[in-house]
Length: 377
Image (cartoon, rainbow, N blue to C red; front, side, top):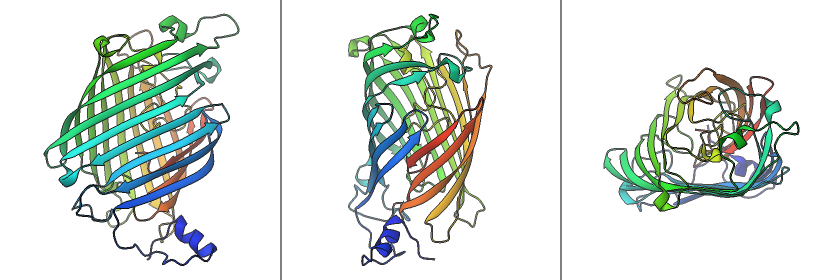
């Protein structure tokens, strides 16, 4: 059946001449833009302008439905102003050069971000919220080179800069974990990273088959401007199956394990819920709900079609996160599970970009709405 997206629906509603459901002659750039109002646990109401562009750096252009010629490059960004007086501008990029020889991966963001923190360790309550206000600049940029089919290795630079940090504290006078750990008005983590990447996905925006693995070792160094020397390692592993095999439905698995190996990271740079690149870990819990030196995370999602024309789809998901005890290092005594369901609305049928609208439920009355452009993982 011919596929449709929001552009087709609007074209028909406003009598704009188009050919709904027909994928046009392959182009080099595919744009998706969405102005919207949203709501999340960490922002409350938000005005958002979000979008992405998918393109081919190689002059041999194929469509996202047939990526045997060249890998699809993507740049995703959004501008948000929230009811909590937060301003957020992230830009994530995944760019392939000609013949897929090099891969440039970027995560740049700047924000003014008052946000509750809930203390350290793997178990806390929503009643322990402590407001911390700060401005934040992140620059993560990595260059990878192919050394075998779908295998890449490279080096990157990582900067986390927080300034103007203030804390409300608790009205009853007790000390927060933030004060006990390392209170500062400004923190800098700056250093190099070594990256290993395998990317065998059929489409980075909407993977339906293949696998993805990224291992990042990060070394923050005082001679590069870091406040302290500290090291961490990150494992980001994903696998996708068509299930049933003859369908377009997808069963996906994701693990995101973020471990501090040595040294003392600033409080706001510790592994924490939903502080991954796309702020997607821990659907069902507010961003920053759990924080410690070590984070283990596992998620599975089932993606299925609702309409035969591809306009609407659905997902169900389950996840679990565990953070090391505090004080301590590698003891994990608590697991925080969550589950939920969501709706997918096709924003661009060519690049397979969806609007994701999910509702997740965690423990202790934790629940909320989560909105994304493109899949969560």
